[in-house]
Length: 192
View 1 (cartoon, one colour):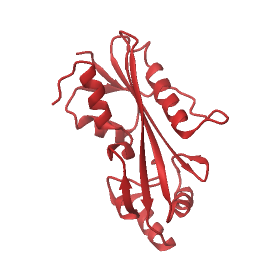
View 2 (tube, helix red, strand yellow):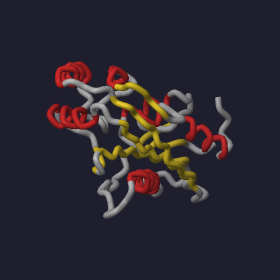
View 3 (cartoon, helix red, strand yellow):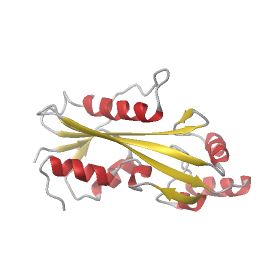
View 4 (cartoon, one colour):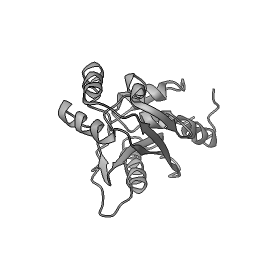
């Protein structure tokens, strides 16, 4: 089995990958994440996942490199990590009562053979109607300032939703594990 490298500095993606019980290392890729004019959310996230994996090929020439990216479009604009309390409040207020689709991409690149597998996993989130007070309580308790959409689905963020729709809830956290398992199996890795 080739060594596995996660092309991400995200602690959330690392925690998800650890669930599979496979040894791996991680490295932060240097990738410009600016959207190209007219680029759809799915195209943007797929391009970025592939770029993240490719960015590590020179450092890891005989590895399985995992690239992943996530984009939420809100009112036609890509939503990123809020960074601040005020920005998170604005994001959650804008999401209140809406059904939104997160696009999470995955690329598994075999840097030895040059072959890759890629997929975009859509995941729909139906937000409850959120009062200003509920948003404020949530943000003060969880402080999800490093999460696109301003919530942690694996924590108290679940209280913000009316429904979740998709094939793999892990994709909402940032790494579609079901599809990654499929890709590992194609690479000859026995799971579990």
